[in-house]
Length: 199
Image (cartoon, rainbow, N blue to C red):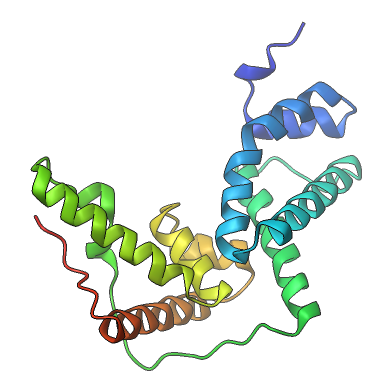
């Protein structure tokens, strides 16, 4: 009897493509929470997130059964790319996607919560408040901008990886990030929100 829990996602995907249904059960169990969190963060609507999640896994099943997956060591990226494509197809269908390229350069590195939290309780409270404000500002961004910020700062992906997953150039990924930062800073000013961490 196979020990599915000890197998890598890539191995499980290949086993499923050969007809091993228990391998797919393990794949789904491992990836469903992370994938759904990503989708919900991008689409911002639980009902749409459920639809996208289901459609993503239908596509995953179809591609695996058709032998359209090869072990590249990046099953998670492959999964996220399929979800991204489903999301973009939905937005195209709704004709609501639009991108505006930024003209400024900004940096969000100082907002990484885990790297900056201090053990001091007062500072921890202030930092928690700042991160909650940042999350609210991110929630107000258009989906393509929210997606790149989420991938960069919550999944710690490089811009090269983001461009591969989303199917756009690195320059477009950088542009979306810059525009997201411009928008977040503008919203912070409008609502008098301080985005400074206590160190």
